[in-house]
Image (tube, rainbow, N blue to C red; front, side, top):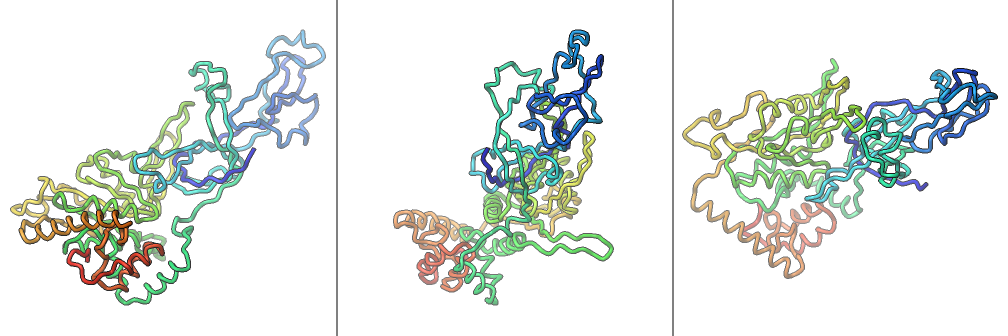
Length: 472
């Protein structure tokens, strides 16, 4: 009996069903009329009045128990089980069950996201579709999943005497979250850093150098600029004729192995307010878009996939070339129209998937073959390639001086990390003495302001002049 506030994301919704608050029953022999409430109490004979309104079962999943004998004047003449329900005189309210899951960005690495069953009633039904981020005010309670209120599933479960219970939340209030960015809160120091950064004419260069600063190389400059544009996204446009143009940017990184493609994907999902990372080899069409699942009671409910859960953020798909062609076709609509249409098992709906796609793939031969054309190296259909706004061919050029420079940079990052750990982490971004930027203290300060006020002083202290191993 305690109110609690629980934020999360709706991953599945069942159909709206009527739940009885009070049943009107009548004896088939003597026509004795009674009202049965949710606590199995029976009222006296009379017409339906105000005493039945608002009463009902204490649990949304509990059932009703009808009298086995007539409660009239002559119960012996009516026999056993004489009562039948009068549906037109009963009181019903709308009820819907949903599954609330913690946000993907809040799940620690290596752990499964936790979910809980929620029950909404009356005016709260059909307020949130799968993929909607909500904050619910509810009362935590238990119900016997193998009891009488469980429908057909209760007959299949062994009788445990009510010892095994299932947790659920009985919702009394629900609020939609427009986006994660709107709920962000910044300190005064961070707001001042944003204002200083907005006045800089080279703000674009400062920001793209802050993308994955530990990844070095001249080939990464354009990739970092593209990822920066993907994170900020564009502006959605609505034409006078009603047509909508998407503002999200889709980027494809295609090239040789060991070129930090997966690191870019991991970094983007960590920086983005809403980010979902998945691998093409272990993903299916239903897991990326949406699916219709049958529960233990035999009812169908809609469950959103990765692109639905990442609504308003980015979806990083690694090993994009390892996906089955049928699964790649399933995300065509989500990438261009930014919607997912579902028409299965009598459920017809359209879900929003307003997310940017950052994908990484390898050429058809594992490495880019310079003796073949680009179309022969890319084993992707033109229908999926047309959905990407920017496509980068990342090639591992065989050059001794270039490879030696990369080796020195990698060793410098590792040595800097070890020194930073020994001295208490005196560097920016966990890089020890390697500063971010080109040795300009203002640039480092502004880049630190983008990541938090606690890094401002660290960035100012870590600026030691031109560093040959700098990310820039």
